[in-house]
Amino acid sequence: MVKLIENEIMKTFYKKRIHVIAGILLVLIALFAYGEHYTLTRTQDRVSEQLGIENAEDWKNIIGQQLLDLERRLDNPYIPEEGKASIRVRAEQLRFYLDNDVSPIGSSAARFMGQLMEQSIFLFLPLLIILLAGDMVSGEVNTGTIKLILTRPVKRWRILLAKLLALSMLEMFVIFMMALFSYVIAMLVFGYSGFNEPVITGFRVVESQLDTSAVRTIPQWQYLMMTYAIGYFVAFVIGALSLMVSVIVRSTSASIGIMMSTLIGGSFLSLFISDWKVTRYLFTVNLNLTSYISGSFQIIEGLSMTFSTLVLLGWALGAISIAFLVFTQKDILA
Amino acid sequence: METVLSLKNVSKNIKGRPIIKNISFEVKRGQIYGFLGPNGAGKTMTLRMIVGLIRPSSGSIEICGVNTRKDFVRAMSNVGCIIENPELYEYLTGRDNLELLRKMEPDIPQSRIEDVVELVGLTLRINDKVGTYSLGMKQRLGIAQALMKGPELLILDEPTNGLDPAGIKEFRSLVKSLSKDQGMTIFVSSHLLSEIQMICDEVAIILHGKIIKTSKVIDLTIDQKITWQVTNVQKAMKLLLDDFGIEAVKETEETLSAFTDDFRLTAINSAMMSSDIGLKYVFKKQKSLEDLFMELTGGETIG
Image (cartoon, rainbow over all chains, first blue to last red; front, top):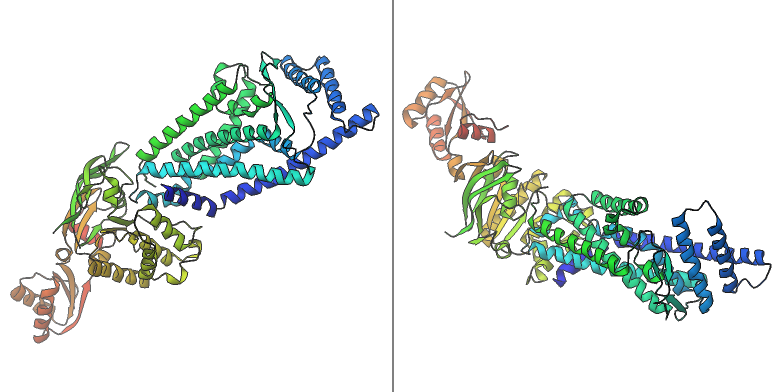
């Protein structure tokens, strides 16, 4: 089995998929880092202008200003009630940071790495994984090499298992690249690692109210480990789904296309019909797992870490079962 | 003789339509067995069922006495095959392609790669990417893949498709030497009768998903059509009828034709030479697959 996995990993590397993914990661992380840097300096400039003080470097001034902005928006009659709920949660969170003297902003490599994963877990990371997994089987059907490997004296399920395991390792590699690239780039831009800075986690949003009863302060590195582990879990789920689609359809482009449109369509769906109960069982609305530990506002009521994890796990297991069933039974006609 | 490959009443329906209808045949150890039929007759479908890419709707397939559905791994460990085209990873080197296969099976030594590469004559280019290979080189690498295991049974699907005449000749001698020197059993499909005649011992002929004939290749060629060009056609016809019992047909003023086999042809020709018939030329018309099917099916068209 180890040799079969080696084969699969060798194929992916020589196909240069990994190179493409690394390239996309590098460009996007660099842009994101620049954007973060730019926003921060601009906020500082704006705050020092508004307050007429020099030491806008002090995060408390910036947060204070942000709170004022949020409260002003709450008074705006044109913002709908759902929008206000999310603003209220955000404001309460900021107040909590002020009260506890822990900065939620600032530029450190660790904070940047965390933000990168939080921002990419529901769309960007899945897209990369789809790119990686979408042709694992259909790619071989496309080129005909599936006939080569299926006429060797190896049971079909072992071949698919090797592909699944190779994929899980490659996913780990992608997550690792994400961490490494974002660390290196953030160090170049911000010049400060900040792995031991405190982070507040454990916010919960219950009925549009912020619940701070379970809040803890943990060091950044610990928070990062959690975030990236969750990122890996999401990558695995998306990988399993892409693998299933890749087994079922014949062409790689169709396989990648189907997964991408499902992903993007699914997240639109959650915006439009957020009060329809069934949508909470879609995998797309449950991908944003990191938002549970950072305590952001949820569009769909009643989702929790446990619920989302179970839903995703269910999708992954279902996908894997279907993939194995189809792969071991199907006739290779083309 | 031991049976290496046997099909018993194998059928395949796709979407309710019967594609392969109840076919049976046996290939003995050491044979070069031809599988002849026009395009679309079901050759590739049958081959795919043998190598486990498609499961038969009914019937059983045994390789070296092992049922492919019951113990796929043990049955297939005796087989090397090329189905349709050689399937290669274009982005890998020739060597990596073989290495990949080597790793899929237990106990194929590293040195085996060098052996098969040398056998198919790819030593010079084996470390280049397959994407840069010519069709002939890909074909050779495909054969190297199929031979990796040192199989008991080699299955080749239309192996000379796309090869130039030199390549075809080379391929024929390779197949013959594999059979003679290594005692390999070879099952080869083709839509060319001449191809099968040249390399095979026995043949199964398939049409519309049915085996319409299995026989020794020699028996197929027994009545090849010979044309003689002579000055005295009447006398030549009488000679054929009286001395050999062959009814010849007068084609033109100077030519007549008849069906006969190689053995009697020598005798006929020397008889004609020694009489005053005035023999000028003897032509052999290679029987085409169409002619053969016309005979076997009594005029049913292939189309």
